[in-house]
Image (cartoon, rainbow, N blue to C red; front, side, top):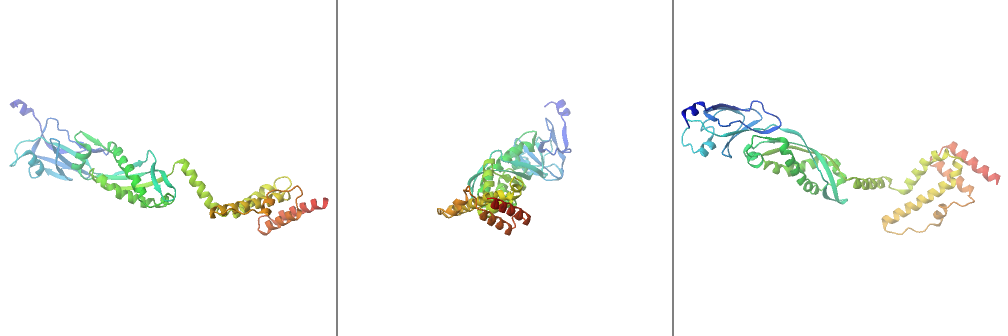
Length: 345
């Protein structure tokens, strides 16, 4: 190097990341052809760490603080440079700053359903999404495993990799949770804790600390969701006889608005109750594995005859009144209609 070139050469005496970008996880201090002056000042602010890299090899990592650079400050770099005594001249080394702030509210989700084995439904496909937070805690490991040499590395560049890790472990966490899908919505906190335990080692191998992980939603594909809703509906219906009584009671106000009033539905009510009894017997028999016995009386009730029995109508109306399924006024009106038809015959 000529004397003129040496005089023109600039030396760095202050190293710092004065205006950090929150989206950057790593930023390399611009060195170009400059060299670091012996005894230069290094400032590492809170939520930062600095890493010296010699010819692509990670050397000394420095926590927040103010440093005067010498062989005592940089023992690993001193060994790599083979300095056997205090160096007196400028030196070349890349300096990387790392953002150690907590990275909050990072989203994750399953692009495709994850198939797991469920206690109640067998093999099911689940979709899930939520949030997680992490921070960078090991710059040297992060540099070796993730960022490598380069001018900068953003959080967006890392998130796709982290989401892939999360989805990969999701099936294992759900499958080993021993929680049926039907109970997962009420146990999302427990699932979040299990996912945190499963994911923490994978984050650690990248130089990261998983601070929190939450499961916000777990859903089935639309076809399976419909099947689940049908199953829930059958559980709500329960006793078919009671369900038929409920259906009958809710139909009475509508029938009262039709021509003929309540009196005209006497046979229909009897038939409906007979059908409900048949359905209840069939349901109970199917659950117990038995063949329902033939019930001539119920079968007859399901087929109204041309000559309807007024006494049966009155008995049916009386039963509905006693069970508070119709009002006294409805009963009196319907009774008068039946008697009127009876006397006119």
